[in-house]
Image 1: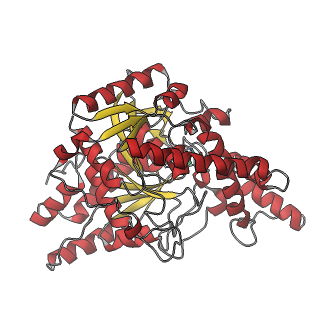
Image 2 (image 1 turned 180 degrees about the vertical axis):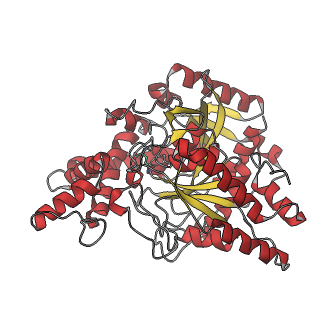
Image 3 (image 1 turned 90 degrees about the horizontal axis):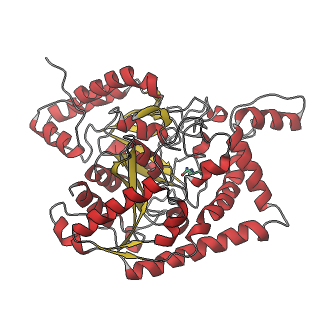
Length: 481
Ligand code: GLN
């Protein structure tokens, strides 16, 4: 029998074929395993492929053969970022510190996906502890961009985005603290959603900065992203910051047939903020995107977010502050790999010096400094005030417009090694993505044309808290323009 080509598959088409008996779950997993074997060595998207993926798919085939009804993600093979716990599996967060850590329980998102019939293909590469925008900070080597192997896949969820773009999974999970789902999605030409803060449980996600962290889906169509989001969202007793759907009235099941109704969405463009960070190609690409939305009937208007230019600075105070206290537990004695020294103090020093890479150590030092007595008011308290100001500016803007558009990144994927020597250049990547994390807003990156070099551009859409449904509507419509 000829090997089927599943490269253009969507979840809807997969489920429909499964229901008809056109194919089996094990067939799709076998297909991806073969593709991974062929393509992954050149990309380093997966750190590990799970040896039980096929067994899990075979169990699904038996289940369906016995007449069980189809679940929401029956047999959908998913790639999982290396900082999301799967019981009995390694979860290293891209770090030597957790190289040998095996998860003792399933993250809530994993338990939900499992119950919906999803199959986990493997764990994907990432910047160490999700700190970075290129996956070059991984202790296990960088991930390459499938569109150009000399370029980065973005980060920190670079492995998940590259796996999808290279056709090595049907969907993937990432985590987004300051852009780590959206930015790699943009660089690799796929979609990535950062949900409303609290919409998805963080239980079982290795923390970077808990007041910003959200797990989010990556996929190749808006419908696929929505299907995963519908399964993983919801209040979780194990995460006190997860929200009940009752307090998020905007979230609604999107009807797939009435896109026309939404043509009249008002879309805001924070023009002055964009002017500060965009290069010419990026600006041109963005104006083509807004023009095509305008032609489709959307009203586009300029808005002002005067504090948005300070979002990046505030983020790079709050995030390291939270990270430094989270990472304190990895001392080789209570948690993490142990590198012995001469005495107790030296134990700490060698363990944290060897177990953590350069960027993690940099942020621990920055964060500890920002939180220390005498500097707390000067840095952390100020950054926190900026965060509040940004949240209220967005709230005011959403009285005028239904959603806000920006490019996802200032420019397409950069070359491997290009920004490693200058951390500030790397941080500037996050200019347009961090405001949504500071304000707790849902934001999606969708593919939006290509540069002359052939590299993908991403368009970011942000909505008020609970407005994921709006993002899916616009994203579906945009893909059909
Ligand atoms: N690039 C950002 C950072 O380095 C985003 C990280 C993230 O979202 N996990 O902090």
